[in-house]
Length: 311
Image (cartoon, rainbow, N blue to C red; front, side, top):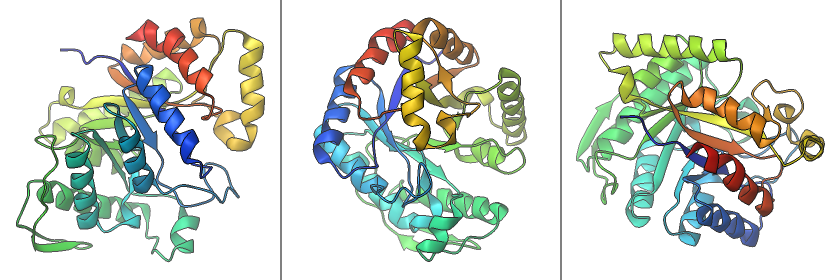
């Protein structure tokens, strides 16, 4: 059965403004968005020299408290920033208290300056992915309630208990993002319920998908059991000039808004068919990053003119 098409929304984390966050969350919920998303960074993101960044898990909890049904997650929680057993406990508590609204994105981490600045070791990419895999083993074991034990190269637990368990069963959906063909996509095949990637040239996406499907087969997993989501930097408006104005105003927000190959831009009659190309490839969740995440009218415009055309 084909999964329904849904849309998530990144919320602003670059300003400590609770009223703004509440308005964005409640507007998205009232417009029918499926989920709210945050990135898990500490500073100098999403553009260099950006000092104000709200911590992901704390902000997720507030978003959930301000809403009733919309799902909440991070794309993605960084393994290196929290002990995985504690992450399992935090996630289980969040899911239990929100009525099962957690989207659990998890990743190996990449932002070296943050690691160094906060005193975390920054091993090789292969080691970070191995740590992520051990962490996900611990997290999924603990979500069963425990007592759970695990002795790995990087992490360990001994008769650990995690109560309350997550409300979602058998577990909250695990999202892993990325396209590393040797190790990362293998980890997706082993542990994830959802694979997240970026829009770009369709042949490139098709190639990554073929590699992922081959990893699934090697892991004795049916590739059809893996859902697909897409992180979409989206600039759209009724008129092309408005689209250009949005992009001009967003140039300071990082390379994706100036020359990123993953950028989806244009009037709805242009962006809807482009997203539809990914629906045909099995993508069922589009997570939107907007040039101005504070613009409530833009959130509403997209709901009327993009989401309504694809759902």
